[in-house]
Image (tube, rainbow, N blue to C red; front, side, top):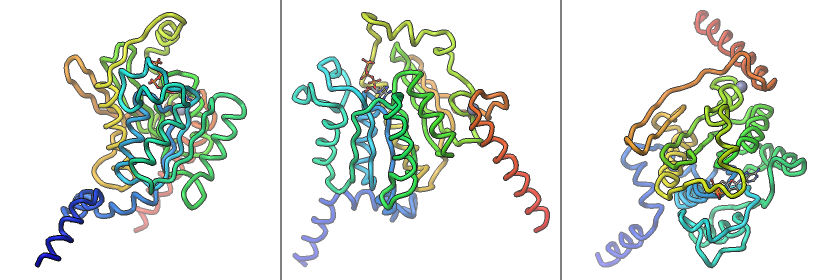
Amino acid sequence: MQERQMSEEVRNDNPYSRLMALKRMGIVQNYQQIKEFTVLVVGVGGVGSVLCEMLTRCGIGKLIMYDYDKVELANMNRLFFTPQQVGLSKVEAAKQTLLNINPDVVIEAYNENITSGTGFNQLLERLQNGALKGGPVNLVLSCVDNYAARMTINSACNELDQVWMESGVSEDAMSAHIQLMIPGETACFACAVPVAVVENTEQQIKREGVCAASLPTTMGITAGFLAQNTLKYLLGFGQTTFLLGYNALADFFQNYAIMPNPECKDHNCLKRQQLNSEKLRLNKLQKRKE
Ligand code: ATP
Ligand code: ZN
């Protein structure tokens, strides 16, 4: 009797027993598969660091992190990093903290600029071979804060037919979005360039001496949505959201999908669109035969 009580306590102590309860409740049939998945995260700032922490606590198999920046005191209005980590590269500081939380996660950390020639080639290589057992990663998550880095991830993912999710928080911290990009099936980043970029407000805000706002709340919420949809996408439960928009002032959410643009400027996007419509056509024919 005493022994049984003890083992119950041990089980309740184990964070995985709480995660596996999702399986017992019939919500996620295959939760243990989380250990087999590899996610590549670009940008370990206000959104990316929190996202990495969530995935680490959920027991993700492997995380590959990219960021070119160092931890600064100015980052302390966000979650995750601590003043003791100031001066360390963000990826190195994140790796230390994450391994402390869950040493079972395999972590690769790259202090690189993905838009540089070498950074981009290395990113392409890791996207194709970075998974736990080799081969392509399962999902890419973009948590960067600028147009060039987003376009770089977009062109790499269109080239490699890699599914990814994009995220962004507005410069006034009052709105945010996440968007699922399936090459050829949903709009890519170049298919529908966001309004802020068209109006060039991002460049105006980013110039020297201009301080953009940021809130740990909006960034934490965005990271939560991204992590939640990562779990749904990888483990195949619920509905992975296509485009989720969040307005913090009104607590208003928008949820919709954008179709690919047949006049997209990215030639690999057009190629993926053609392959996808061919696939749909063949599926239709097959269904008619059955
Ligand atoms: P802020 O811009 O408000 O001062 P930040 O630079 O920390 O803060 P966040 O929005 O919190 O920005 O996070 C975005 C992260 O993406 C940053 O850590 C940044 O270094 C990273 N990032 C942006 N562009 C690239 C890139 N080309 N290669 C690698 N990392 C990038
Ligand atoms: Zn496109």
